Length: 372
Image (cartoon, rainbow, N blue to C red; front, side, top):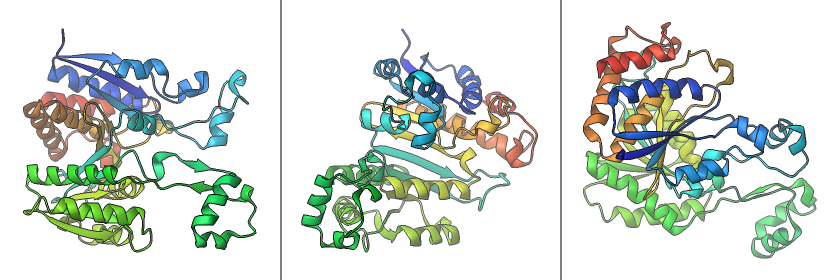
C-alpha cells in the first residue's frame, strides 16, 4: 500500500492545464503515493448545483492531503443563471468550494511564500523572500451575511450600537451586512504559526498587518493576542502596521520584511501584492493547512480564456507541490524541486509567454522534471 493518498482536484479553466503539468513533475519525483482524482469546479455547480460534491468531501476524508488547481467563481445571480434549467429557482446559492474546504477541514493557516527567483524578468527585486500567514477560516470570508437585513438582527444592532443611528430611516431591504468575526483562538493560532515559522527558518521579525485604529474590536483583538504570543519568542521582534500603510511599504521597501501575518481578507490582498513583487500570481503558491489535513494550490484564478491552450505559467502549481512535500516531511525532495524550478527560471531557455517566451505549460513542467 502506498505511503500517501493524495487527492488531485484540477477544477476548471486552466486548472486542468496546470494539473497536467503537475503530474509530469509528480511522475518524475516518484513519491510513494496513490493519486486519487476528485471532482470540484464550475462544471459540477452547473450540472449538480454543487461545486464541491459530497462524494469529493468523502474522498478527501480518506486522503493525507490534496492538490487543487483553479476554479471559476461568479456572483450570485450569474451563478444561478448558469445552472441547468431543472435546478434554477430552487434556492441554490453558489459558495466558493475552496472556502468551504478551508472551513470544513479547519484549514486555519493559509501559507503563501513569495520568493524572487534569480533571472525572472518579472521580479521587482531579486532579493525578496516574503511569507504571508493569512487566517483562513474567520473574518469577512466566514460568509455570515445578510440582505435584506433581518428586522430582528437590526433590532439587536440598534440596541447595542449607537452608530446604527447613521442608518436611521434606511429601509432594511436597502441594507446589506457582512460580519467580520474573529475569535481569540483564531487570532492566537495564526499568529503562533507565523512565529513558529519565523523561528524555524531564522526570520528576525513577524509583521502584523491589521487596522486597529479604525476596526477596533476585531483588529484590536488580533493585535492584543499577537502581543501576548510575541512574548513567548524573545528572539523575534513583532512589528505592527496598518494594512493601508503596509501596501505602501511593500511597494517602497519590500526587502525590509520577511514573515507577515494578517486576518483573512487583509491577508488575501497583501499576499497578492507580495506575489506581484516576485513576478505575479504565476509564481505564487499557497498551503491551506490544518492540524491533520491540508490542501495545496496555486493562487491564480481559472483564466477561462486560456483554458486548454497550455499557455499559462505552471510555476505556481509546481511550487504548490513543493509546499505539499514540505508538509509531508519529504523535505529533501521539496528542496530539490525548488532548486530545479530556480534553475529553469535562471537559465531562461524555457519560458512561458508571461516571461517573454513561447514555451507551453507542459514544456515548462518537462524542463523542471529534466532538471530533477
